[in-house]
Length: 596
Image (cartoon, rainbow, N blue to C red; front, side):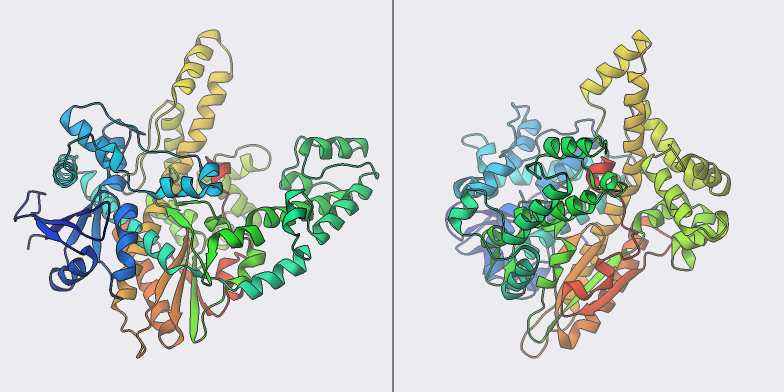
């Protein structure tokens, strides 16, 4: 049975818009319908026909509809702006403008307008800039172009381009396009529903960590909260008593040098190796200073409304397909403040974390029987240690992470030699990806997300250095090899996570509401971790939906693989009470900025 699609063109002013039914190939199959109020009209069509909604961009249309939609909401969509860059990358046009106006211009052979862009710092500090950042990008269509005509034509062209892809690529990219569009729905709904945030608990945590809130005048003058100020004094005394600004790396490094401690930087991993009383004080100061700057009172005033933290999520905001956020630090909530995430009375938080996700992705991608066997018992690193490292879990973990992230120096080198002997398929996969990157090629995720090609400056460095016989070419090549070896794993993990939240969103909608109409909602998503806010009476059903969705995502993305992706799931009142969100044994992978 052919899938019904309906194109949606929302009015720029007012609640109305136009709808047009489309066939499976994107061709119009009926007249344009003008409606006064899109939300109820679309809700009625959703109940009766369950179409796939086609629009220029989810973040332009869906947030306007959500306040008026019934609890069931919309099921599926095709997001032109999210799908366009996936297709462009396969056509060798990585990083080209992706708006409806840009896609229309390419289709018509017209000059392509740049996407509307605004600096993050400007958007966070200026209310008018925020409005511009999140405003519909209609200005990208040329004067006199009918937006619905452009939408229908661009959508049909995207379907044609998908169908023209090689058979080896097409099914995976179709799934990725559907999952990316579903991610757009999830992102808008998470912003609308918000993450429950207790202001009294947050105040108590800040008071304990930082002391009382500085007045507006004190904050404007740069005064620190009492406990942070006292810690700065204690650090200064530990470094010989000379007045320093602990927020100035240069001053701190000079002060350490005067104490006989030479440091190249103040990065945390270096400070943890320093045997000096000032080192732990600086680590603590940095932690509290980040909380004060990024998640204290001013942050809450800007981002917490009506007891909910409502950030703006950016689907596919990182090249690997991971999400980002526009302000608010949504994906970097400090663990020490997670106690402020408190379920409503009579509700619970279902917190689930996919432990050791990327090593399991490597096992599924490579089909390496030894690595698959290592993960079968639960703790993949422990299984790896028992198989190849005489039970030494720490060395097993260090070696495998080194293989995935391209770390070869120091202790890692001999560990990699063991891994190559015992797990040749897994090591062969990441090393082949590295060689592709070193030669200037591109690699893909499991579903077909293409990594960025090398920059022009990279090409210049490698070409010039090779001619001059310098080592810069080798260094640049190895750096890109580290990027591509990790991309195939991290981007494939992002594929799985997208499929997970798409499946979970559908399964949560299928759970019958409580007698008072309460429904479980996905309210937080971070790489490999999700939080569902659910009525207590159906929290167990929501937790079961998480487990089923993880298995569905495994089958969709990796097919018939014996690798399992277990979710460590907890039903709690406070986010901080969920062990799954803590990765207490230190199994969190490297940060995005360290791998890219």
